Image 1 (tube, chains in turn brown, orange, green):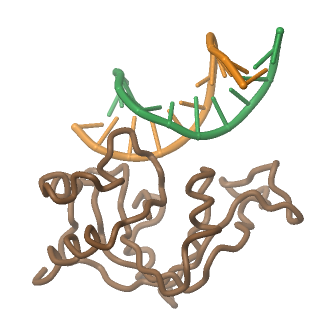
Image 2 (tube, protein in one colour):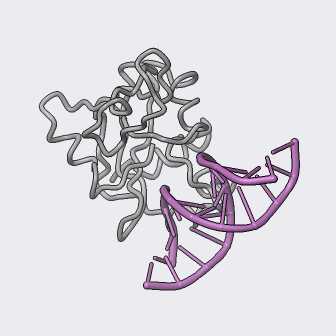
Length: 150
DNA sequence: GCCAACGTTGGC
DNA sequence: GCCAACGTTGGC
């Protein structure tokens, strides 16, 4: 799950009293479908910092509420407001996540690219701009192993 | 349904 | 700031 740290970083999540946030603001249909249909309570996700000096994986979050309508789409004051979404026919979805772990060191995009076994990872594929992406079990394990000892 | 124009993402 | 690689919009 990607976030621009200037907008919302893993430290922002840690600083939240309950260390919980709604992952609102996703406005892409493919990513929406994952939020709505696939992501389950108990799922773990990497928290990825994008559009920053050193992009990469900052830590891990756990899903504590599966897909439900993203009400920021109905909020006129929100930067995520979408006039085409209504309460009756919500267009966008979100999930709630809780902080699980922050890596001692960020696992940079460069570092991920240097690992041959991760070559097929969706995150590393050319032109991929999705903010929510599946991670395969073996990819998860490889990345998690890097963090052992970090 | 096609596709040109435009907008967005995100690494560099 | 640049630009590749998308996604979206809207006229036809």
